[in-house]
Length: 433
Ligand code: UGA
Image 1 (cartoon, rainbow, N blue to C red):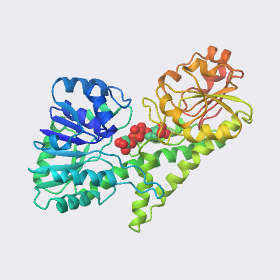
Image 2: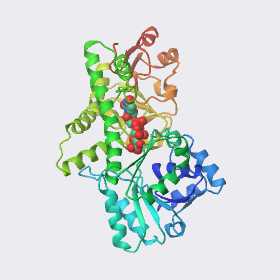
Image 3: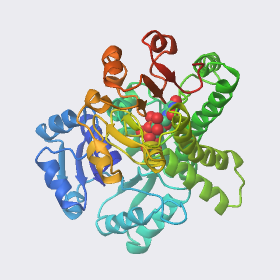
Image 4: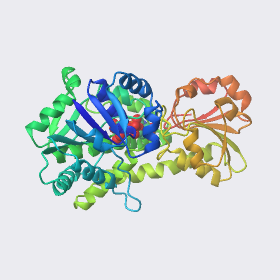
């Protein structure tokens, strides 16, 4: 099949590269000239493990190419994907759909054969119908169907997620479009990955409902962690005991500093806006948004308490990105916690394995080039992101470098007894000291 992917951001680039790996001919289109020139020269604009290899192999095989010129890419396409950003609109938290609608207008100009216009971007219910409307208005003669095909990739494991998804969701309105989408995902179909065909509206809601549900799961366990701390229970044991119930499942029950990233905060807020717009009350989502926002500040307070006040103290912060294996800082807990500590008079030394470039845009702190340099002469260390390299620190060396052996581990990557034996005061999330 010939596929055009509009938008070479995170979702577009990963999906485009992986679809070319499935054997399709994919052209990734973006209006950002520098990005496209970079991609043509093998420069991957984001950090995502394994993406560079998939891109290189498929460019070499002649199945994957990049251009800024949609007109040249469209004529032979069977399906055109819209994978542009849908950020939170400033001011009201609604998803900003201007890029999606602009893409629909552009696509319409080149619809000279039957094509399926597939939305991969995360879009509120009703958007795909609007996309169809726009195309019909621009080109009343066009022969096309729209399909909603939301993406469930996680940053840091996006390639694996694309190759082996739990399911593929496709909302569409005609058998012809279903046939095209079956062909697009044929390799997965052969692997017996469930392909869930639904209406456009149901597919749109599935994406938001899935993200909101996962965000609720995290928020729930974070609140249980608060209770565990007060009564001396261990939230990891609680999560395990709950999660082994097949109806609950053990995933997304890691207590921590609150969820961040480019999706959960934006999508929970957008879903809330959608429900309000349609006059439906969703108190759970409202609470998830509120509790998670508050949590990041509470983590600042937790650190302050552990340090016995932070004014005039030097704090080593390990990890700044919203999770490991990404350079993404969007809505990272560090964006709230670091300024909180600074405002309280702390001096911050910080290090992140991949996020330093992004972090420098947000913070004015002392950035260090590696872990142990960060720890030197600090009054204690705070772990904000569970990068692998922070999981196996040389604790004796850490103790030598720090002025005081204090660790606040907001990701629960160490065991309390191990830390105690190593002579640390150790504070974690939802576990007895
Ligand atoms: C999330 C979803 O997991 C993907 O399925 C979805 O496709 C994606 O959003 C999207 O909508 O594009 P992602 O944002 O990459 O993926 O990251 P997650 O691994 O889901 O983590 C999100 C946040 O939740 C992180 O801040 C993480 O630290 C936090 N988290 C996750 C917890 O605090 N506890 C957990 O148990 C799991």
